[in-house]
Image 1 (cartoon, rainbow, N blue to C red):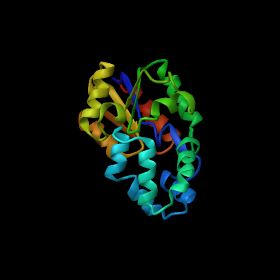
Image 2 (cartoon, rainbow, N blue to C red; image 1 turned 180 degrees about the horizontal axis):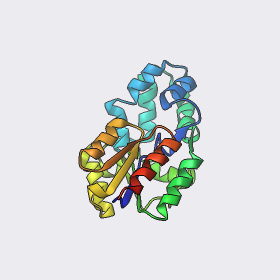
Image 3 (cartoon, rainbow, N blue to C red; image 1 turned 60 degrees about the horizontal axis):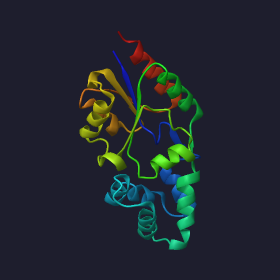
Length: 200
């Protein structure tokens, strides 16, 4: 029986205002989408998510990597702050589930996460635990990150379900015995979760 719901942030609850992260940033900076794709899958991006480098350092690296002038820094800063929105259907669903189940936010995210949860996205209080890569110094799909979430919630792996838009991250959770749902859209994810919760 499922007793704990563990949610990803970007791609599940948090979405870009149009397109994908890669396509939108490429449009904002007028650079090839593939170059952005490569940049956000780099070791430097991992260091940002782990909290080892701060936002200004990462943005400077990103612009240099993409061959862009530092005068475009405000574009990157605005993109990070303003080009994302919290999906209202998912937020309402998670808050409704939260009335019946403990909830955890488990995300690979840099250090501005906590400020943005409070001031930009206004979703502070939706989760019992917020576990971010920048705090625990681990990245999904490292099994230790999922185990950390379970330990914080006081729950066994087989009692938890993890919802993420990246199949590899879901497989990481499944590798330690959690149930997993690959998010495709709100309707599908909610239906799949309700089916799991109905199992006896």
